[in-house]
Amino acid sequence: MVPLEAGAHPGLENGFTILTLPEPYGDKGYVEGIEGAIYLEEQEHVRRCTLRFGILTSTALGVSASLEVIKAVLHDYQ
Image (cartoon, rainbow, N blue to C red):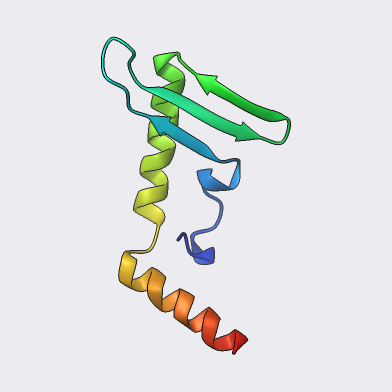
């Protein structure tokens, strides 16, 4: 969970998945967009997805903090 206070981050653009496959296939990327989805096979494009994932994981709350936010939101709806 990325807090609102983090501001703009790569996860706002679109959903993506990094597929880690054994050789000889190599890693691939899957990017969802408003017009459909594409598979990324060029290593530079996959590297960019990996960098985006790193930014998201470093920006995201930890498990405990995420649970606290979820509990607070649930409490507000009860």
